[in-house]
Length: 265
Image (cartoon, rainbow, N blue to C red; front, side, top):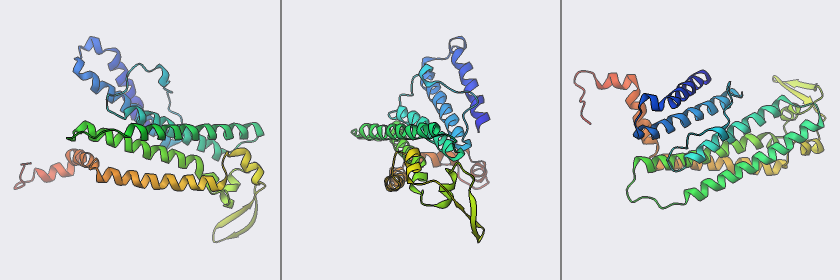
């Protein structure tokens, strides 16, 4: 996925630099914007799945290609960046640290990331308060889907930030953040329990939230994700995705071209 996303980005950069030479019409400008930013989203997703930075870092502040004109598209792009950042923070937590300075840096970064996610969620809710068009169009349905997806992804990022703190009473979780080697105190049914020196004071050094606060955030975020998925289904936003899957699925095409199968729609 990472390789294909990077290749797609290279092709789009070449196409963007040669737009005038290729004589592309203005009407293709919107398509180019969407292709570029969707490629960027693929790169973000690859980083999230692999828990690694992309081979080539993209400085969004230097990107001159405007966001697509779809309502809510800018929120989606910022959402992906937030989810990538939350993933890398999670990786840093799991890898551990060996100094109080690193612990304080993680504490500050988690707090800042939480505030960014909350701000983006507020933006999505405010921008979602709009008057629905009398007649649904492909663009309006896509905009709804983008907004709902952005909220789902942001809540997923919020869970990434809070889930370890929420489960701090679990010995396995505690051992991940103990800088001293853990000693086995018992083993039964294949489960190894570790003694850890991580106490409440050390947990407070790493995390800016209490375990109860993080549990509440995780529960609220999970419920919001469920609500968002229900909205996608109820609004019919998923039907266009299913239509595309059906259109490009070779087995479906083979079925429709069999003798005696009607081609009418």
